[in-house]
Image (cartoon, rainbow, N blue to C red):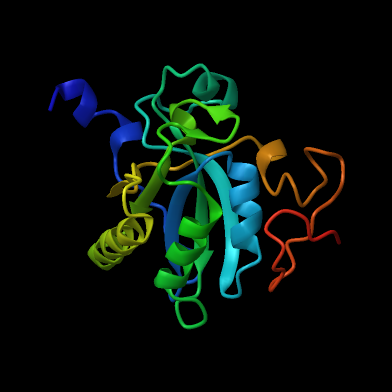
Length: 191
């Protein structure tokens, strides 16, 4: 590894810790982070969500820079969850159900490497469960090849404030969408 890579904070492991020591982090890339965040906000046991950028090589990226395609960052949702209420395997199930893991660097009309599918783990247990879930999903999809990457979580850069809870605040189509726990409509649970 080159010296610049060793000293690059963007390539370092995510060293943040959850607010409550009994909670864990999970991190996923599954297309535009707005809808992905809203889906995870609705899960019982998820105590906090943040959207941001990870897995790239540029320290302190901005949305504009990430969208330029030059930083290799992924739009991610970092989730803080209580494992006594919500298992990591349940979060993986939400992840697989929320996007198409067979499309490379795109989800629907969103195209670019920042929209790639990824599971970014914080410990070896998460890594093992992620790999097992990917293998199970691959069996389910038969001939369609999953392109989801499974990598250690790197430095998390929190996205600009206007991106945080964007759909819940009424972004996008101008109608506020509820992050209410137990909401089963994947797109529109209006509050």
